[in-house]
Length: 410
Image (cartoon, rainbow, N blue to C red; front, side, top):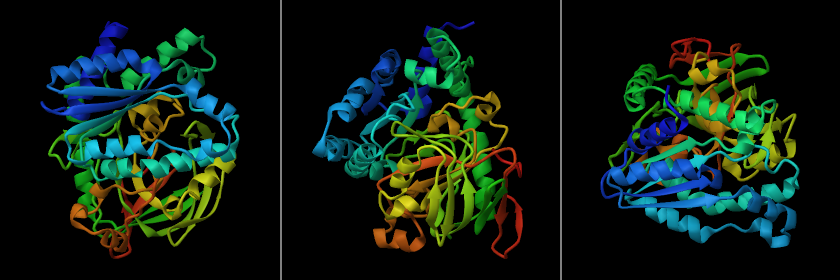
């Protein structure tokens, strides 16, 4: 049986070879919580081994984040390091620098803080971060998002376990869900990518006009852009490098038309958003826009989130996940979107991904808007899938049929 150190090294190698697929001569920019330093070091080792010229890591610290909300005042909540984000965007623009985000923060870090202060800080950061989001969503470079187990996150997921046991349990779940616990994780991901690509090929051949969702609290029709493309698994960035943007990933996703969403939908899992927990989301769409929205928990944060800008109340992504996915089968609610979105079908408000629109890179902004592509300074997924949700594809002639290998999706 592999030791934790051996599994951590396998995970790191998987991230470098399958997640980022680093090429000789590239630089790598990593962001990570302080508690992920052991993982960062193993990733850095494998990155240099793969030929990276420079690996730069920016660490975050939850305690100093809390200090801002406990001691800051006035303009503090409207500030963001635009200079830093502009530099990051410049690094990604020509594809010479790969992007790795390691997450693992306490999902409820800011639960007891002033919602207005949290909202203002999130808005300021999202606005300043827009140049980076534009490079990432247009796939200018190879990028990947992964998770690390941290004490605070482990306590949140496994509140009934002792701290050390909770951390062990979370690491074990991460290794299993990412396939890092297998003898050949890289090979396993190659096979998994082929399966995801087969699903996207089937859906792209269908050319559905819309998706119809029916389930408890949900009666929703999501119209798709006419020239939509389904994607899932490894994708090729504009710099020519094939990468897996999310590890783990069980979804296939495409672009909804920003003005063709009608009906009601409820969330089926909690959403961790910028240190705040949001649960029990219920919204109603008219002509693509959320016209009614509430949440049983974190209502004020949710409302302020969808008021960030015009695109924040419209959809930028729709994704299908089979209810039989390994993450769903684990029965664990991670309270972290990276994992929970791969346990359940989901939607995302905000910025759409250019890879989901045919010839997006050649289109002017007004042409993308005319095609139905949504734009925003945020991109936030929330889960709507369950064992009770059915998803049908609406054909061009108005008929309908199961939109997935399994009609019932998670």
